[in-house]
Image (tube, rainbow, N blue to C red):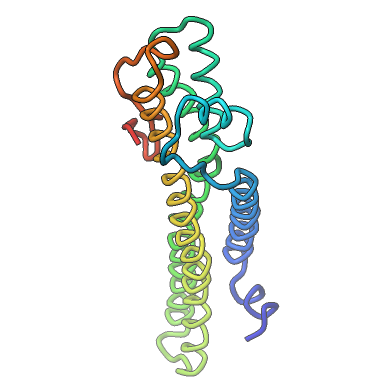
Length: 215
């Protein structure tokens, strides 16, 4: 079956699912480009005071932004630098997760939308049977049923790649969040008290799925 036939048989629901796939593809490409531009996470093994200061201007990744913010706050005399780490880390994490909720909505509602199209198609098929008084050609009936089932197949075909790629992106964001947490923890542990005054060890807060928790 060609793409044109799928559009013609599926009707309005397939058009909506096509819009779903285009929107999801746009978000996914944009997110992968952004993660690529972040570069690799810095190596933390053996990182000391001079290493933190060098990392401050070494790159554009979230870890470097976190280090720069904590060092800047230390120079300004801020005592509770763990709060600075939590605030900056959460901001960076939210930027990395931008569009994730939209992808989750698209991936979770696409099968339901396809199922809705199937139910509507089945209702129409049985209405035809009723109007014909039960005397319906079996071949014609089978054709109507598979056309109705088409939207469910399209919905699943749209949803599965979206959800798989969303989980991949979430894993990438989680790894960078853990890297930021490690950076903050090492800065609070290894830098002298004259540079930083450690308080509670807190990392960036993660707000996915509506609940805040430490990464």
